[in-house]
Length: 114
Length: 112
Image (cartoon, rainbow over all chains, first blue to last red; front, side):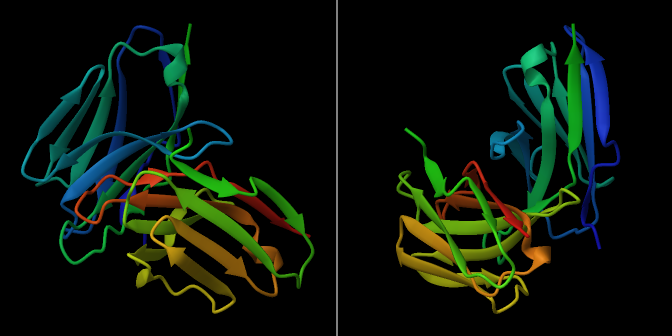
């Protein structure tokens, strides 16, 4: 039972354009969402997060949008750079009673081409 | 200066052996975790410790035993290794009052 889904296993974008990575969740108890970036042979690196009381959070080139009614979030990267090429994981957790238990999606491999 | 460090990074061992993976964090966090990424790339939580106390145990076989000697360390001991234990194991930490979890670089375990 996959509670966090990233339906696109891969995405290819040209340098300078916008990258949009999508994530859907099914558990209505989730109220905190995070995006992680992962390079090969390294651990996931925290990128950006959003709580369910917001619908948008921005940090430099990265913006996360949350649509609670649709149980959908997305990560926008603009402009995309070659160094952004990595696997991006969406993760979610309940803020109370969950013990900080993160549930991850299966990841989207982003390739930013020159 | 690595915030969450785990050793060894790579481990190849035979079925039936017992092995340990060590983890240390220097972030001053009081909660530590073990996650497993399997061959299908699913990242799933195994254990969570807060101030040396077990708070999450996700139906992991008894062959897996976490040990937390202090807040900064959470080691993972695996008995009687099986082929299906081959995976990448990630240690992580966070503040109990915070929601951002920081990961180590992973330990690639291969059981042959």
